[in-house]
Length: 333
Image (cartoon, rainbow, N blue to C red):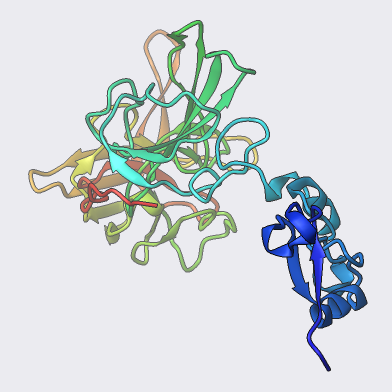
């Protein structure tokens, strides 16, 4: 078949209809026939092919987007603001570990940095490494900041939050949870960690002895996550030795007497002492009431006794500082 060409576009401008001076587009007749068969408009190449024939359904970006059924996210920019699409870092991944001011990034969402020790303005405690999440009001600088601790074995830290209004931050507020509180044998909550519970693990009548993160620490104790490595040995009736820690807590309470589970009634009197190497000695005695000369009943130390099977002794310890903090690294996108 003889090759035929179809001129699309403007009419010839040369004398005698000289097509060599045309500004139109020439296409092979067979190409035009195929294009028309696929759904393109005859004589108007280039025109958009329908989606059903492998085209986009439009000759403009908006028309092609509509024809392919693409939503706004298909052409949205990556970023933090309204109308943007969040990248992997904004959705839960940090790209850098660096020391910088806590107030550097005020954009809402997950901050793309892991803040390291030495960063001005960030909370204290835990491992010294913190993630940051920001809830920001509209386009203002007023915001609520949540500090999430970077946890490593033996030091999980706690969650804190802070409000910032007109550039002025409020004091940090700490959230209490199972990682920084303990529930005594009588049911009362106390701010604490690391915690050791002394009890007859095998014969205990308390189903909650090993609650949450508590695990056996010898035959006569269970320890929570931040007291891993501690163990308890029974030396005699009501006489227990605790090893594996630096000793009793340096601040706050150190021991809680065993209490009844139904109302917190004290079931014994605890005494503690710490040796130079950090070993802790715990002794438990029965209560003995004495009538004073003034006619008052005063509780005192009686005969040694083992921890009742329906209770335990709480011991708050000082543990070695956690090792191997996260390295200072920078991750490029």
